[in-house]
Image (cartoon, rainbow, N blue to C red; front, side, top):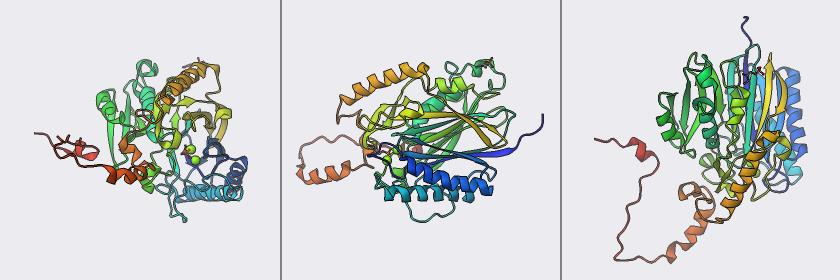
Length: 389
Ligand code: 13P
Ligand code: 13P
Ligand code: MG
Ligand code: MG
C-alpha cells in the first residue's frame, strides 16, 4: 500500500460576535471568514476549508501541509476572525470581537482567545473523521465521550473485537491550572484516568493515541478563555477531532458516546450545569436559558487534503430520544433556579461577575465570637502535590 500524504487538519474557532445575543453567528460574518479562507486556498496556503457555526461560535475547518501550530495557518485564522469581527462591529452584533482578547497576532492563536484542535497524520486510503463543535460549554465536556469512545467496551465494540484496537489507547490529559500533562494508558490505568478526568473543569483529555503504533486518534481544544483573560468573557466553547474506522473506532461507535446527554458546565452566563444535547446544524443555535448546551458533528473524508463532505452527523431520528432526555433534564435542572448544583460551584464562579455581588455584602457579615470554624478544604494543586508518608 502506497504511503498517503502527510496532512494537517486544523479546527480553529472563535466567538467574534453574534446575532440577537449569544445566540447564532450571522451569515455575513461566515461570508467574511469564507472570503479570507477562499483567497488562502487560491494562493495554495491551505488545501481545503469549510466554515460553519456552533451557535454563536465561528468554526474554521482547514486542511494543509504546514503541521500543527503553524504561524501561517494561525495567522490566517486570525485574519479570518478579524475580518468577520469587523463585519460583526458594522452590524452591531452582540459581543463583537468577544474571543479576540488581544489586538495584535503574535505567531500563534493559542492564548489569544480562539480555541484550537489540530492533528497531523499520514492520510489513509480512506480517512473518515468526525469534527465535534460545542456551544455553551467547556473543553472538559468532551472528557466523558472521549473516555467512552476510546476506553469503554460497552460503548466501543472494537476495543474487544478489533485486533488493531485491542491493546487500547493512550490518553494525554492536560491540567489547565498547572499547565502540566500526563499520559495514561487504557485499559490498564482506567481508574487513574477516571480519577482525574472526572474533574472536567481542570483536567482535559487533550489527545488520544493508539497504543499499538502511537497513531493519533483524537484531539480536543483545551483553551479556557476565562483562565486566560482572568475574568468571564465567554465559555471556551470547545472543538474536537476524532479519526474513524480501520483501527480506530467506527463512526457509529464515536457517535454512540453522544447518545447520553451528560451534564456539562456552561449554559447561561457560563455559570450553570446542563445536559449536552447533540443537534443537527439547523438547530445549532442556543435559545432556552441560552442553551441547553449543544454539540454538532460533521463527518468528512479527507482525500489528498480535500475535505469530502460533510455529513451532518446528528441529523437523525436515532438521536431524538437523546434530545428528549436532554429536554427533560434541562427542565429538571432549571427548576433549581439559582441553586447549586444547577449553578456552578464557587471555584468556577470566581471567573464570573458573582464575586462583584459578593464583594458588596462583605462588610455586612458580623464576626461570631464563639464560632467553631470549619477548616477550609484544600483545593486545586495542593491536593496533587501533597506527599503522604
Ligand atoms: P459495513 O459492513 O456496512 O461496511 O459495516 C462494517 C462495520 O464495521 C460497521 O460498524
Ligand atoms: P458564549 O460563551 O457562547 O459566548 O455564551 C456566553 C453566555 O454568557 C451565554 O449566556
Ligand atoms: Mg457569545
Ligand atoms: Mg459560544
